[in-house]
Amino acid sequence: MKRCHPKPAAGGFTLVELLVVITIIAVLAGIAIPTIGMVQRRASNASIRMEITEIEKAANNYATAYGDLPPDGSSWVVMNRHLNKAFPRISAVDRTLLYNMCHEPNVAASNSPSGSTFYPAAIDRAEAIVLFLGGLSADESRPFTGPGGPFQFVGTAGTDSPVDPDSYQYNIDRNSPRMELDITRLTLAQLPNPTAPVSTSNRVLSNDDNGPTARGDLIPVYVPNRRQAPYVYFDSRTYGYVVDSPIGDLPYNGYADTNWGAVRPYKTNLNPPGAGSFTAANVPEALRWQNPDSFQVISAGQDDHFGNLAFNPGNSNMPAYFIAETGQAIACDPSKGSASEMYINLTNGFSADLNGFQERSLNSSYENSHLDNITNFSEKLTLQDNLP
Image (cartoon, helix red, strand yellow):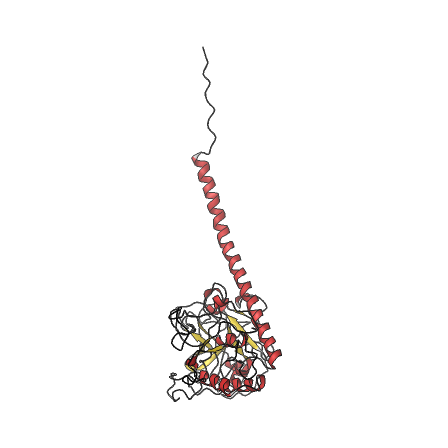
C-alpha cells in the first residue's frame, strides 16, 4: 500500500506579515516623499540661481561691450543717456521708436495727455532683460530695428510708420545674444493666423501683460524652467525713485503683476551711511541698497509670487522697502531725521503679525511670498535661507 505524505505548505506571507510590510512601506514613503520634494525644490532653486548668475554675467558682458549697464526701463532720462553712450550713431528711427514705446498711448494717468507722457511700466523690469540681453543688430545706426535686432518691421513701407510700435513684431531670430534665451520660456503668443504672412494684424507679440491668451506688447519676458513668474531686473540708477515719472501713484521703482505679486529693490542693513537729515527726494537712500552700484536680479521662487508691496502704516503714500538680511522694513518718511527712525515697527523679522516679509496682514491671500525669492545678491539660495 502506497503511503500518502502530506504536501509541504506553499511558501508565502501570512496576512499579518503582509500588513507589517505594508505598514513599513507606508512609513518609509512618509519619510521619503517630503525628502524627495525638498530635494527637488532645492534642485529647482539651484537651477534658478544658476540662471540668475547667467543673467548677471550677461548684463556685465553687455556693459563691457557698450560701456554702460542696461537700463531697466523705469526712467526715460536714464534710457536716453544710455542710448547716447552705448549707441552714439543710433538713428532717429530707433531712438524715436523706443521713445514711443516708453510713452505709450492711453496710459492710466489723469495728469498725462495720451501718448505724450513717460509711463515707467511701459517697458517693465522683466521686459528689460529680454530687450537688452537677447541680442542686438550689428547695424550701429539701427541696433533695435536692424537685422538680428529685437524688432522686425512688418508694416507696409510708405504706409506704416517706422517709429510706430504697431508696425513691428518681436524678432525670434536675434543676433549674438548676451544670454541664450530658451524661446519656449519667452512669453510669446501664437499668431492669430500661423499660415498667413506676417503683417501689422498678424505678428509675433508677447502675452505677459494680459494673460496667456492675450496678445499685448512687443517685448516678452523670460521665465525660469517650469515656473511662470518672470525674472526681473532693477538698475541701481533708479532703485529708489523714478524721477521723471509724472504719474502720482508710480514715483517709486518696482515690478507688479496681478498674477505674480509685486517687489521693489531690496535694502541692506550692512554698512549703513549713518544718521542724517532726509528730504522727500533722498529718503530712499536712508539705508544702502543691495548691490548699490550695479543691479538686482530677482526670481519669485517656487511659489511664483514675488510678494506684496508694503507701506508705512497709516500712510499708503509712503512705500516701504524690505531689508534682505532681516525681513524688516524701512518706510520712506521725510518727516524722520534718521534711518533708525524710519523702521516700521516690525521687530521680529519674518515671523507672524506683519513682521518683516510676513504678509498675512498685508494681504490675506498670500503668506510670506518674499521668503522663497531668489536673488543675485544673496549668499544662499533663498531670502529665507539667508535669515540668521
